[in-house]
Image (cartoon, rainbow, N blue to C red; front, top):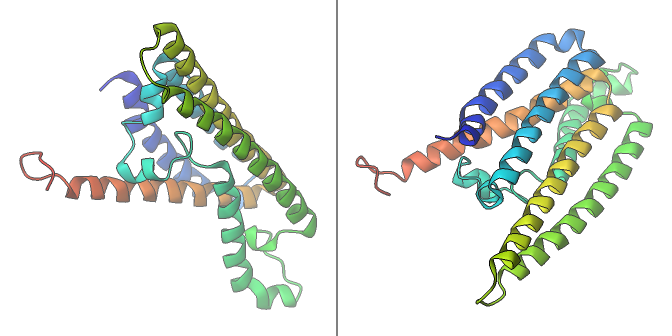
Length: 226
């Protein structure tokens, strides 16, 4: 296992689980500093991703350290930025329904079920900008793939140029992922941001654990696909 694979297979899942635990424990005293520490951890992850992409972009795009299920959910080698906003709306809707009787009585929880109209307006605008960013990056990715599909013979310089374009597209996708995360939590109050970060960690950890179980079920006792 090389250093990149060790980071994504061993270090990141452990750190994400630790982050989820810390956020849950500190939720009652959540403040902006707690949220900033969580974002700093994601920044470290994306720096590691950038290093891996520049070192071996094709391998980073293929993400051999991910499970088959995780790769099936990937958009440009990672989670789709708009998925975070979908998760926010889903969590908000579930909490709003459960808290509706209290809200009608004027009792506010201050969590994701209690988003203000101003917050919802800013989230809607962020989602529009995020979708536009995704479409631009998807178009760039399609151009790279079409370029790689051109017939041989081709020079090494041409192939290296296309691989370089792949690196830039992956970096742009990660920049959009991180920017979306930062802007979402900036819109939310600290407790709301903590609840969203915990939900995002639950989703990522759950997807990985189920993916590992599915990958393991396909391997026979001698390591052959069953």
